[in-house]
Length: 374
Image (cartoon, rainbow, N blue to C red):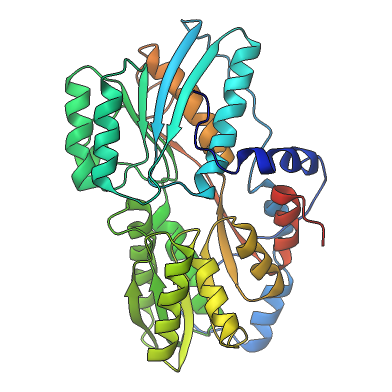
């Protein structure tokens, strides 16, 4: 049942591969290591001279299978993730392309790719339990809650199941988890910190900010929020006035932003820790007519968020390479199924990249990802 529940995959794959042939330029601003405020002239100069080379490479569609020779002619995998959402549809594109390349080699990869409509660690546990009784070669999970899900993963490993983690949230060896390997973002804390440094610099290191986290206990969201809070704590003239969880819902992020704006008339910025909340936050800020007064930073490649970035309503987005996450996940799942352990064949953690995109790189990202040329 290849690629089940990938709700947006068919809609965007043709546009993605057509426009990926274009030669585009982009940007990535370097954040400051020091804590001294910059002058207005220096800030303007920095914003006008971003390094354009990274934007077009933020998502790498140019992948080929490595030289590993699979031991079987057919594999069957199960992948479950936190919630049905376009972010994971982008991961699915990489999974599907890797499967097609294996098929060209005469190797059939069947997989199920499923998630709940609403995030739930208990739902994830049930899915893992059900999958364990269906003879999959490998079970992959994007962990919804480390403390809740780790004992289940360990139990499956003890029973002889081959379990990996992937995508955005790991349950690591340091967490006491016995999962075999992880493919995905290994630097969520650093992503949250880097975006917050960019916001602080833009605000000249003073002002009140709010934080939209996402899913309670989701490792990636919590780590980004922790990175953001640690950065704000460095600057005596900055303050976090509110922290709220939107459950990865655009509508809930919109409502929470309205509450932030009502409670804090002097709010200067909003830090968004997932792909949904920059959209909800920007909608509310624009509706309130405050897009020129409130600085928004956040995560990822949502089309509406990139449009707000292009138009200046969002200041910066950290775009993850979801396609590479999916492609690498499938390759490593094959090796795990063959009994290969982390080492020479593949690392215990496969690190995927995040690129911070600013306004002058937004049009390039919109063209690469969505074929949008306006």
